[in-house]
Length: 307
Image 1 (tube, rainbow, N blue to C red):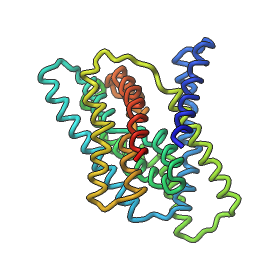
Image 2: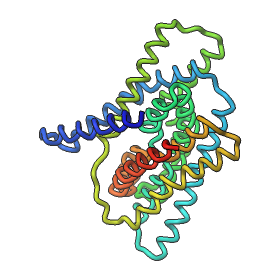
Image 3: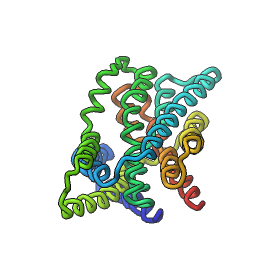
Image 4: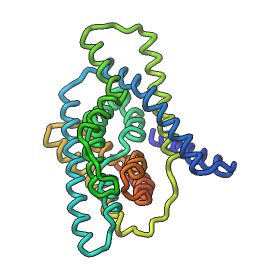
């Protein structure tokens, strides 16, 4: 199962290599990737979200996963903030770099790696829990807490909570989730053929998302490993440990607990690059974190799945 995931990511890496040697610039490749990302997020993921909530009833485990996710992400933000305040006392770190490191240490790629990984591991149940982790914790915190961190440390200095809330409300996957819940609870019966089509869409989109991850990875040799290493440790090691602790305290076990741990161990979110550009935190640091945490995350998750 994990070999299939690696295969799709390697396919993406190979595709980027082929496009590069064909003379296509990195900027053009990234532009093509961003257009595919946009299409997937706004026009495909909403249907996958709808299918998930329509066919998988919301349970107490979903609520607990949401709580674990929120506690884990916020704890990582607080821990990284404390760590880099201490480091700043002995090293000259630009605020823009600190902002990128705090953001990348707490917010993971739970959609483009976590979702397909958990879907392949645990099927529809894993997909349902993955969406819960994302859209009931990671996404709202990304557009509020992560943006606030970027505003504090970046060059752009205006942050309005109202704008972030409006952005969250406008995200199509959220409405896919809500529509699925409404139709299920109202007793509306969808034709079996439509469910089958949505199942096929779910299967193919998870593979496409893994290929996109491979296309997105850029080989970066960091010259500041001592600076980024604490953020990497927080993201890849401490975050899943916290998820395990919080999940166990809330009584989670089996697949729900595994989902929390694996999602918490996901690499830094690709959205970090967009936030770096939009809010003035350090782009180079964001790219380094995405590359290094992707390598580390896949290694750590592979190890965890052996047990």
